[in-house]
Image (cartoon, rainbow, N blue to C red; front, side):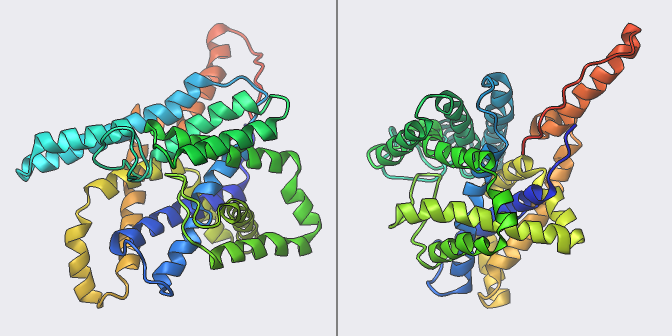
Length: 375
């Protein structure tokens, strides 16, 4: 088995924590006051957290190989299905137990899950009551991987992928289609950027020319300073879409560079973040479920009174991070289900079966081809 590259796991750990932080700020302040600490943190998180996942996915992708539809469907679509069904069931039970309309809640969340939009827009193809939230990423990543396999091997691949991006971006202004297909179309460009970055050994180049790190950090700084909104969930790239596109790639490079330093200079912190980064998929799903059922609307006013409105987003972030990590740990120990949310467990089981097969068959030779570790 190929060893993991720890600074990539650290970067993913930072990104998933920023997802939780960004959502914690949003539920307290739908529009953080300009110039406030909450606004600066919100802008910081949204400059890179979702692009990083798509770019790193492309970095470890092999589009020259056949598309593994069954594997992708299991890891992404089935995971989406189980998570969204959990949201439907839990919210229905809560509504039924509190006598606030169980049937209405079921219909609301079922329609929301079926539409699969990451955020609410005014141009849904048909009426859907709400957005499903963070797990739009799973649907979009499936489409991005599929489109990447189709177009990356074609002549003039960059032009085809840019065309797919433009179709996804501009069609979103007319109508927002179900199952986040347009998010997947635009995300294909981010996946391709990650793939090209690896082919061109961008990180190796920057290692040998360290002074050039100033370029991605400068562009990231400009993107942060000029931030005017950026949501891959509904293809909103703010007032400067080109800056958002280039800036998010540079922000991802910057985060990876910082995580390289953390890996070497602060090993205990790096170890903790890398552990979180290895399990971003289940953490994302757990976070979505927690986000949909926790009555933050009742909690926020009480916290506001206790902290005088100063630390509410950060208290919520700390509390829900602990909750999400503990629930993820619990999910890890649920038989059968953990195989779906933790692909590494399924892989370990397969490897154990392969290792046991020669002994069972009376042979001593096996031919194992270590697969490249995908993050």
